[in-house]
Image 1 (cartoon, rainbow, N blue to C red):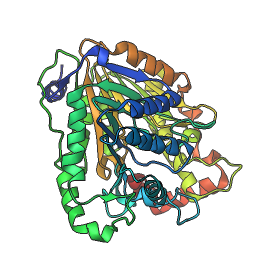
Image 2 (cartoon, one colour; image 1 turned 135 degrees about the vertical axis):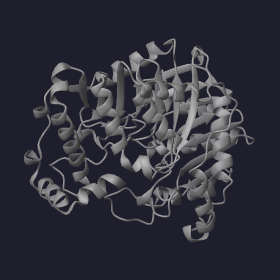
Image 3 (cartoon, rainbow, N blue to C red; image 1 turned 120 degrees about the horizontal axis):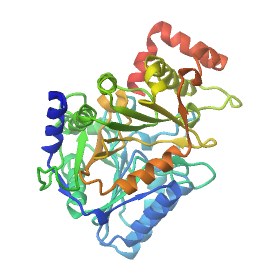
Length: 450
């Protein structure tokens, strides 16, 4: 075993961990069951509900969730309900749509004005402008139960209509874990003075949050979860992690240590193929030492921003093609390993639905559940979190195997780089835009912020 592997394993073994009971962990396998579980947990919560996501959309599924929260508060006025979402995202429309005065935030205001029950919908401004970083923490706490997913709340994430956006959905019943996640939100963010109540009559503008916001961003770069844990490597356990910024980022560091510790096999889920340079280096290194690598990535048509050729083209629609061209170059570079099967690229595609899975599985022992996209934006700009499960006795293997089989069911195995489209085969408008971006080197800037 090389010294790099030993050092990486020592780092992972030395993380403070919360012991888990095998019976307290479960996995859901569909977006519909995720919505059902959310509604069940909201209805049954006794003393606290904390929901943390990128956004809560003003559509049918979003309304189902918000109104369920108000119903729960009506039934139990002492129930503490806090919804944490991105401050900027809540106050604009969807990318590519016409501007409107009606936003998610105006909807929250209308509902609270009509209900008047004090459900808190709180906007967190990670950066002064959304383009340069968002609130990307994930996790839903109901009393002592944690439901972890990278999903937000809208029709597609919750499979309200025909289409769905596929994610991971893990249930962990553990009071220490739930307490640590709630404590982190309250101590590091909600008490900072840099956040704004989005369903109050008047939303505090960013100009008035400026001073507190500077302090918040400074503190988040050094923030960590507070809990009693053990430094052990012989029992099922979990470590909550967070990260913000390129330096002193414990989540990023742990992700790298996972890859550097791998000896046999690694599975990576990512919706977009746009890896940070550090991750690319670690992947090259593990392939050189013979580790089997499986990457499951969304097909370009399963990307959030994909626009069918039958619809009018918008600039944002070039992104899926930009990511696919990254994948094409990666496949060309490692063609020999694709042929031997040491490297497996699996493209996920299911009839116009979209793919949003994130995470890493190493040597059938370490499992990273996260909303981290493994891209330069998440690496440097967004505030992220994750739950690192250490499973030395493979107690969760049946759940993980079932989850992986469910994911792979809708994938196509790439054994040759020629199976991935080339830029020359793209629609004319996309082709011209990508050529122009590369000529001006603007593609590198875009990859770093989107």
